[in-house]
Length: 214
Ligand SMILES: [Zn+2]
Image 1: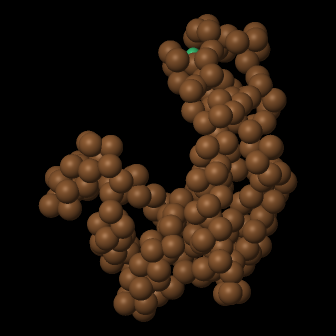
Image 2: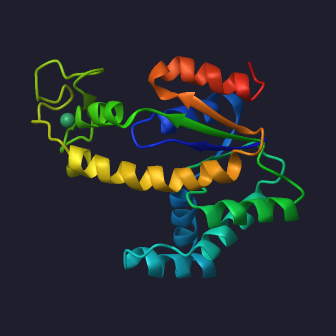
């Protein structure tokens, strides 16, 4: 089975992907991970990718798709979750073409969604320990003493990524890209949208119901 899991930052998409990997033996595909792997192994394509990453440039779609194809050939007949990929229409079309060549296809496309205001509320409540990396949420999992890390006593910070202005900018980018993807996938009966505000466990239940694993 091949599925695409998409969701804005703060939707809990990463947590859901982890649950599927742990409970149902899915293999997790994220472009960041496979880029790092190719770079570490110093493969020809890894060296090309590194030249882009080092300069902070976007890796072109054709290179991303080539790496994806290699990954799919290597992991033939496995259950795979595409996490945060494809991100754009050309990537989605490229992925479909590769899968067709491999006599395979995407079985389900799942969008976990939340209203922008709820995402902003979730993410601006996030606090990070600059010393040990622990992450807190003032609403769901606050530290025992306000602003102080439970583990190491360091004063917590709000990461620059977690301010409302930056979150709204990232959301805008996500919404524009997703609109394109939803239009591409929506004519198939494989696309589902789940309400992310249901919380971790109920979202997980919804997903396994869609996948026929319940
Ligand atoms: Zn700490």
